[in-house]
Image (cartoon, rainbow, N blue to C red):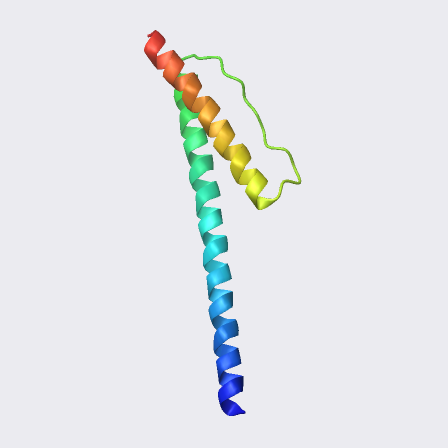
Length: 87
């Protein structure tokens, strides 16, 4: 009985650690994308480039938020590439 109990506790602790690591990875991805977006926006501003500023919709789940940030980053990167090659 003690063996089953300790095994169960160990399994629960490990699964909590994995969930925490996944949440941390997600937060890191979101923060990295937000930092990249901010950097590109500042660069475009310094180049006097007009670009469409978008904001994220509220109420998005984690996956939707990440995809929206990725799309925003991709659009800004395209704007930057177009402005850079035009100069």
